[in-house]
Length: 455
Image (cartoon, rainbow, N blue to C red; front, side, top):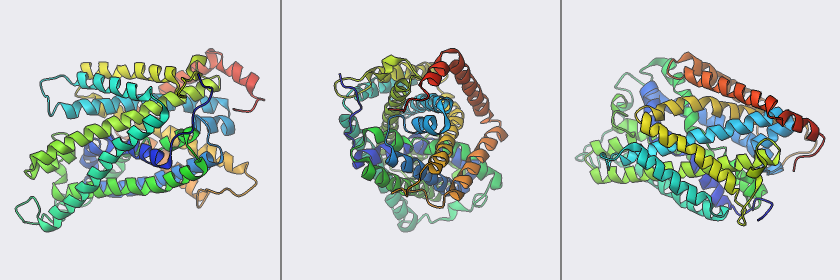
């Protein structure tokens, strides 16, 4: 048995881990929801949302370079805002990872049904849990290498789809030699067919789509040379994700009327299918399955590491801190997988509703996590007397604008009847965590350990 997590993740691993999390079901399946609500104006929503995410990632990256610890933002919240804030943030993020994992395993089931419609969706969800569980019980370097190849498949596919889509739009490839042009972007109700409100209502689902990019912070404790790895990953990931999201959706909505997308599954699949390229549709279906498995892989990694960090601070059972000889928190992985089996049950009971339900609910958890990153970073900056090598630009203005954006997303969650349940569930979850903090003895242990430095 070893006592510490092992620093075996390279910049290549960490960059593609974050890409793997952020380019998953949120893009390939969730984009249908945002297009339906906002129409072509969803492009502006993703551009603005991407800018806000970059602020969050720079703030997190600044703290991670200075102090690359297990638990990342949970540990920073503990250190700069107090044990209770760290406890809420850590457990909230763990349940967020469980929800994302359930959504991704559900996406696998949805995509696989296009090939095997006679088999129930829950079988594929169960198979994905078993497969990803095995990968996460291996050494972290093996996990990082597999995640790299997982993510590379979908990254290359999105790039090729954007290039092929450009040929369809301007050269007429796959459309009888007749260029499709860009008119579909404005001839079905204009850029804002549902008004400015439609674009705004897309923000909660957009937040879910970008959720997972904070994996960069979670991986810092196992990164080789974090002072070089983290800045490179933060700076490169955000613009790549913006290209993939904005570029892919631009191409899709130019080729296919926005109000007809999403009626038969992933817009990526239906777009190629409509153009009479069924082989390409089958390939895209394979890629989106890989994409969902990639994101599922990263959620299991992040969830198990958060349990390890919480245990290390006395905020979770001590057994979660034990590591295997390869430096893997095996019990944290097993507990995480056991909870992910709830997704298999939901896929058995309500297969048609589960994906949209999970996406809406988890927007609150994502906003909480990002908000705590920004608030902890504010306190972190106040305690720094020397210049930092990797800094958030335009601080504190950038943080204030980003916090206002997150608050606005919460307001919009309550505005829409479809997403209002996210606020109810999120507030109830924080209430249960607060009660558990008081009754489980964690508060007393934290008070006793308050004078001791964090490991």
